[in-house]
View 1: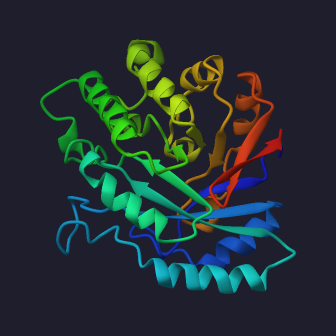
View 2: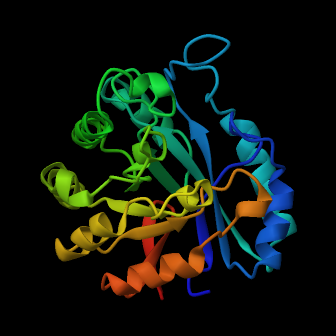
Length: 272
């Protein structure tokens, strides 16, 4: 397995997981991983929260860091454990997210789009009354808005996440149909010194490709992109490092010689 760092993991500190952190660390050791970066969810103003706006994905960062620090010390010498967060980006949240990320000594910050102009594309209502193609394009356009408005992240997560949930999912999805907006997205990321994530999580849900699809990954490399982290997006130990052999092959086929791990918000390049 050429990729040995899983840089997108969720435990019971995230609102959509009940996985014990220690079980994931132990599984990472068993799977021969060198590095784990936990990236618990923090989504301010998430609209579909049962206990009021934003409540579902508000991270208790102090409790999270406390457990991570204890377990990092316990397993020192067996595996490297890094402190990350997955921030839900929305343009109006830029100052709040920036204040939050600067308040903690994160190793790594993923910026992700879980809400598109007030709606979560996880739910069927996001796609109702229009074609999947129209919904996907709106999602991609909102990513560009986030990049321009919200500069405090290291890589953008699962760029084409929305194709997991449309009625046609990725059956008719072709990168080339959105090449204009993806070029704007990728160029904006490069201008700001940001990277992208290669997320294998969609494969276990029956997707044909990773996030982003190979076309986006290849175009990012053509434009000079070099910063790519790899994450399983696992919410339990059973799916950690899923499809990492395939991720390494995809990176190599697109011309990458390295994948990236962040420490203290700085990229470290690891040879494939």
